[in-house]
View (cartoon, rainbow, N blue to C red):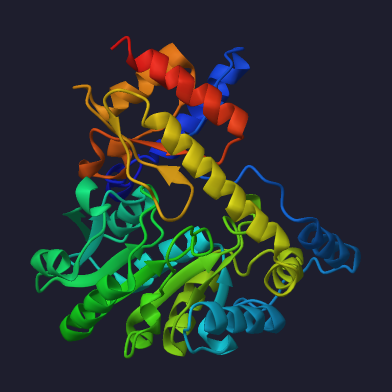
Length: 384
């Protein structure tokens, strides 16, 4: 019999839809999928070549648990340059980004602690909070405010049990980007209330307007912020499972203690390739982001032609989060589009209570599939 804590954990809606898509494809059904949060580009060749070299050089054994020194140094250099966070290699733990999220929850949360989450938000945040025995506290955000939390909204959700705030900008599922003045207000609040921040910045380089701001860059925030990022989205390296945690040395030591008892270290031969990703040519990354911008604009134009659909203009990531007027649940809407249009999207409710009445559409797909898929959605919704 499984543990009670596992029973309390919500299922990943994205993975559930992906599994259904795979099943239908095996049955011969032609599905256009907008469900997975994965770039449809190949990993840049220079990065793959670096990985092959490391394999051929026999770099296939354990590394230091926190990562090889040169990679930790490269990540620190990137973080100080791009994120304006003053850090050194000692402030870096090389680890799969999602694994870092689990380790943070286990390292810092106890039963009775409360963790503030934006609503909607990536479902794995709630999952790790519950696995640690803590309680998620959702802050509902609004379509008209681009789904962004404010310091006042967070303050109203705080209690004497609040231990942590989880932020994600650019956001999955909405693509919203938190602006500098908003983050400054949140930073001041967390400093005043002595609250730790987990900042998930995995989409930091996929941004179209404005700027990406790291909350750890504000005065006094590095000491209370755990910043996550990685290579998956920026360099189309989802299968490599390679990312990092940026934090004060004492926090790196605490989380690394868990790493030594779990994966031990990141895959050895991918780490020299990660150095190449960070220090090598960035043309492929820039080209990919420009292509995502074109796809975003195309998908938005097509969605606005559909009666009963409204959608914000996201500033980052590669998701749209359309609102629909039909009076059915987001689960039912997703199943309708799957069965009637043969198009896969993710139900908004999978990302929290405020996601009801929405669905997530990933435009990490070809222009041809975007045009055909949204056309199918339009024809299908006209029948509801």
